[in-house]
Length: 387
Image (cartoon, rainbow, N blue to C red; front, side):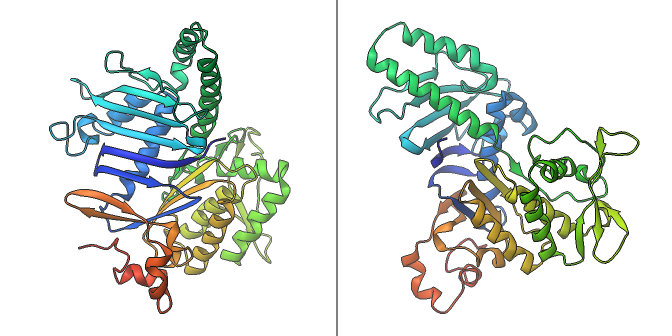
């Protein structure tokens, strides 16, 4: 499966123009309003495009004018370019329509067979699309386009087409598993505290709404990983003993998140967990599961966590990054202290636009002899502070 090595964005929300090389770990830091969430929302956009729900996403975001950098009067279109491993490239433009939606124009892929191979068009200005050429909804049309090229009978082109098909299958896997995880909602009405369908266990949902069902699956099918999750939760919450996971006696198709306390026969439901502990359980389940998503994006994972739990979180992130690409946004100095300068992405706002850059080890080496990475952020040596 290809990994996303570089992303270029122009004309999207606060991002006038940017390019960023992605690493296994990418920790976004910056002041409120700098543009961290806008960068992360690009991945939500890609997820919706893969699902064939671009128009729904645009409508829910307030229309195309709300997504373009200071509106269509200043920004005629949004442009994205995704560079994957082996130099496969996917680029496209989103142009606003009279009904304040988007159409996709100038969508091309470059086969990883050769960086000089001719890009394959999926959408053009003359033949735009309302949903992405690589979405589930466009699979039949995409196959028709490939068939037209295959009729030309050129051996070199056929090799490129075969590679392009494999590439689309691979990025399909990448974006099928793409979620932006938000575990902030731990209110009494949060879905992860409610009764869940026991078969809703294919993947952990972005808000952990199926946490009980997913943990039940791990306990039954992946006991080693389940035990690792339980042991890690105990480190953050020493009073915690284990989850009590069972089909509901009244309806075996339902399950509720319950847990037990050490040295006690009593058990409790999720409402009895502190917000921080419940969020940590979600994070541990996500990062310690046996089959990690190819890309994990978490918005402010440190919310409500004790400093020691944040250190545990960083350890799980480093471990997960061996198999998955991690993108985090954070306001936590403690979390920043757990990573290297190269892991950080400093987000600032200059001239009414978001900027993104990585500090290097060379730039910070002399400073790190006396200060931690988090202290350098607090002192505004790295940037990413208000003002």
